[in-house]
Image 1 (spheres, rainbow, N blue to C red):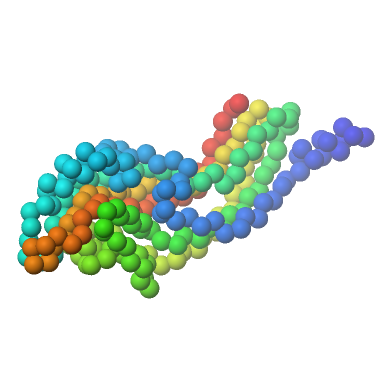
Image 2 (image 1 turned 120 degrees about the vertical axis):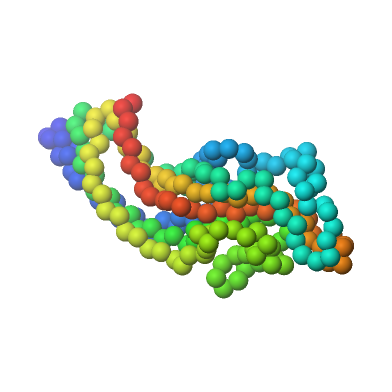
Amino acid sequence: MKKIVFFILLNLSICFIGVDVFANTSYHSFESLIINEGKLLENYTSDDYKTYYKHVDKRKFSGWNVYKVHQNVKVTYVTETIFSYYNDGYTAIDYSFKLDRKTNTKISLSATGSIGLKIAKDGKGFKNNLDSSLKLSAEYTKATEEKETYEMKFKVDPGTQVDLYIYGEGKITNGVAARYLFWIRLDRGGFEVFMITTQYQRLEKKRI
């Protein structure tokens, strides 16, 4: 009798109703992020700043001097693993999965030194009009909140593991800047703009 019950349970289709998954661009909390070339702002060394600051230390009457170290560099990332299951039994298991995802923004900003960030109604920005001085392409625009629902069915074969995670691609622009007024330097530091270009759920099956 126990064997019959066990067999039924193994073949039972199990439904997971997922709560909202907030997929944002705060890459510091991502499980992994790979940049094709160069480095992230958080990895700048003191020697890097010393070298890059030479490009913005020429004083001006008013406004920002900007030096972009990396521009539109492609990155790939995994925000989080939503589901991972290993079937160590002898019978395949059918799964049904529903995921509700909420995307809050497509852009993340970072700053170091005395360069500050501001929070406005339409999202974050850099203080003292640095946004305009960066002259980023038009695609670097703030997005409204998006909601998506995904339903998927898959089979977990014996001796295999299934992982469901949020995978994406994006672009990063970073560098240094300095702000002047009456030839006096008021602010100086690093900036970074990270924009999501593609983000979706990826399901992978691998034999263990």
